[in-house]
Structure formats: structure tokens, C-alpha cells
Image (tube, rainbow, N blue to C red; front, side):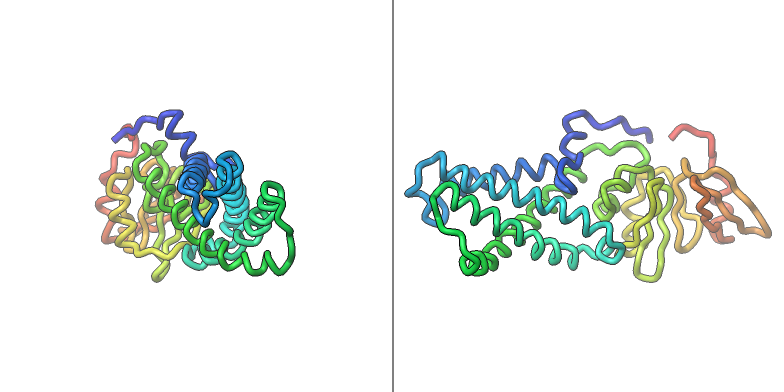
Length: 263
């Protein structure tokens, strides 16, 4: 089935602005800050409104921006890219360092507070808890945008896109390969190894224009450039030179595909 391109508004929500951070996360952080300021959280209700809103909104947005840059760096590490929970823990702990400095600096500028190492060390555990909540909210809001936004034709479905770094999430999906309990997602921008069952991936791929070629391979039809057959089995040459095996069990189904039909 042919999919139309996403609207400019949806595309802007999905686009990364600062590192891994997108517009939707920035808006969510600003709204959280505005809410905390409006209720005078943590005894800030005695402070005048302009300073109170600045105190809550700026550190949340600036700290989130630091988190977006850190997350982008973490996703470039192969092991962390495929393990979301350790990546989230590392992101939280690292993000809390600049966030603590931002909170302390904002208090100095707005309220004339004194900046000291001891105060920053005492503040750090509290900021870690806040950062953990912000990371969870950011990832959940990002997942909802991915699930409800109409994707560009050829990209991976939401369940797979959320496991990919930004560049690969925007790229055309070529194939999905099972490796023990892991899944290697091949795209035109590279591949990523992630923890996911092949059965779950196949379920997510049901709406995609592709075919299972092997007990551990699924291939996008538009990615196939050549089919090579030998003794009841074969290989599909995909874009970029990637080879996907075709086992005897799936050869008959693959041979009946109409490679020229419109996607």
C-alpha cells in the first residue's frame, strides 16, 4: 500500500533539533517547567512570577538540550545503542552533571544564591531523580509521535524505528536479520544490533512491503536489486551489496513476487 508523505507539522515534531532532542521534547519540557512554576513547586510560590517561571523553564529546557547532545553520543556506541535500559541509566547520570550546574547557576543569577561545590554535590542526587523522570517522559513522548505520525515511505515501522539512531530511523529499511536473541536492522544508512525477538519484528513488519526469505531474514521488496538461484535456494542482492539468503522453505514464495509492481 502506498503511503503519503508526512505533513510539515508532523515532520517538524519528528526532526532532531539539538542532538537527539526534538521539538516535541522541548515543548514538553517547557510545559512541565511552566506547570511547576504555576503551582510554586518546592516553595517557590513566594518568588515573583517572572523569576519563578524563568527558574523552572530555563533549567529544564537547557538541561534537556544537554541530554539530547549526550544521548546522541551514547547512541554512537554500538553496545549502548542496542541496550536501551543501560543507555537510559547512563544518560540520566551524565545529563544530571550539566543540569546540576545549570540549576545552581540559575539560582545564583535570579536569587543571588552562593555557588559552592558542597551545595552542587548535595543537589546532584535530586537532579538525578528529576532527570530520570525527564528521560522517561521524553522517550514516551517520542514514542507516541512515532506511533501516530505517518512515516515516510520505506522506513521501518515505529517498533523498529524507536530502536534506531536518528540517521537510520529516517533511512529506507532494507532488511531485518535475526542473530540469536538479537535483531540486526539493516537500512541504507547502516545497521543496528538491538535486543528484540524476530517474531515481534515480523509482527511489526506486517504492514510493510516485504517478504520473509529465511527463518532469520525479512527483506523489503524495494531493496532487492538481483535474485540469484541455485538448487532450490538462493540469495537476494540488496541495495548496497548486502546479501540476504533465500532458503528452500521460502523460495517458492519469493519466486512468485512481482518485483515491478508499485509499492
